[in-house]
Length: 110
Image 1 (cartoon, one colour):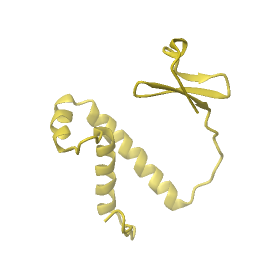
Image 2 (tube, one colour; image 1 turned 120 degrees about the horizontal axis):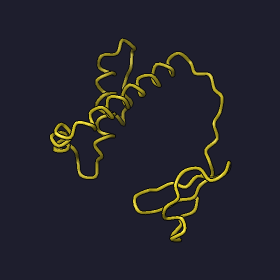
Image 3 (cartoon, helix red, strand yellow; image 1 turned 180 degrees about the vertical axis):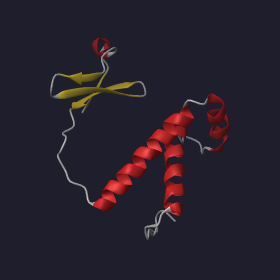
Image 4 (cartoon, helix red, strand yellow; image 1 turned 30 degrees about the horizontal axis):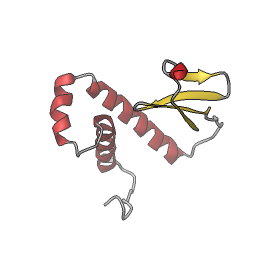
């Protein structure tokens, strides 16, 4: 991964050929190898967690479109916390509370 400061890369983003990806993190431009995709089979519990996370992403994106609601929710955020991440974590916490699976938080999460 390389941080690029050249003006040539200022307007480039996305895939470069089959090997590299140009990403933006704030004002920095990063050139990295393209991530590999693996064929995998998930266990039923992992599929459940993946489906919950997909639902959380849809929930967060839908709320992000409502500017008035976003404005009120931003007041709940801690300094440096992003609203999108906050919404996903809140959705997943509610899903865990409603869950029928015997889930116990780790000592770090409690």
